[in-house]
Structure formats: structure tokens, C-alpha cells
Image (cartoon, rainbow over all chains, first blue to last red; front, side):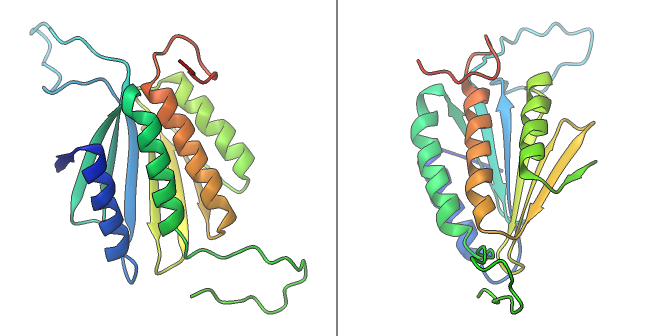
Length: 110
Length: 86
């Protein structure tokens, strides 16, 4: 699992989308992150870890290659804008809504 | 493991689930260009909410929901459902 900076992550995510255009899926996962870098200790060992509240983890994979990045409050605005643009640009193979309510012939999208 | 047909219901249930335990909930997005569909899942490993679509109009909604949850995740959890603006 490769942990990247926000910008590198977005670049790599673009590459993943491009790679999977003909076949395969792109999986993106979003989760709140408390900043821990060590695994949760077994009971008996005191947990000396202070969780932070303002981070989230974004992961992406195409089934083979895995990438991830951590976004915190300071970066979220910029990251979220770039991320939304990326999704909208690449997730374009879906059916457009027919304006005519009766659609006897459904147009096949390329 | 409900599959939702309506975006409204899914979106409301997803936000509600996130707010019950932010640390446990994750949002998964799966996109298949070759099949032309998009699937969103929100789960806390006990409850699993899913929404599938092949409609271009849903991309914006899904992307907005992700953005909203992302902002919840990076904000200090002092109050829920309102967006941090500072």
C-alpha cells in the first residue's frame, strides 16, 4: 500500500481510472482516521496513543495496485475540489437521462 | 444489507449511520467503466447500505455525499449534521 501526498494521490488516481477504462473496476474507500501509526496494543499494554480528530484516509485500488492518502482539515477544501472534478471527469460512462419520457429505443452509450 | 432504490433514502441512512459511530463507518465507491455502473456502499461492518446506479445524474449526488462525509470526518466532532465553516 503506497501512502502518497494528496497531489500525487490524485495523479495516481487519474491513472487508475484511465487504466480501467476497458476492463476492471476502480475502488475508492473513504474513512475517518485518528492518526495512529502503530497497531492497537493487546490488553495488558497501556495505550499511550493520543487520537487526533481531524484526519481522514482515502484509499484507491484497481484490484492490483493500491494507493492511499491522508487528508486533514487544512487540506480538505483543496483536495475535495480536485477530487470532485476528477470523479466527474472520469466517471462518464453512465447513461444520460432521456428527456423524452417514453423511450422505446434506449440509446446505447459508448 | 439493504440495497436502496431511492437516492434520498440512501443518503439519509448513510449520514445517520456515519453519525452513530464515525470511527467505524467507511464509504466505498466502485466504478466499472466497461459495464457503465457505479456502486456506493456505506458500512460500519454491522450494517451495510448500498446504492447502485448506471445513471450519469447520480455521479454528482454521490460525489457530493462523499464530499460531505469527508468534511464531517476532518472536522472536530463537537456538533453533528452542521458543516464546519471556520
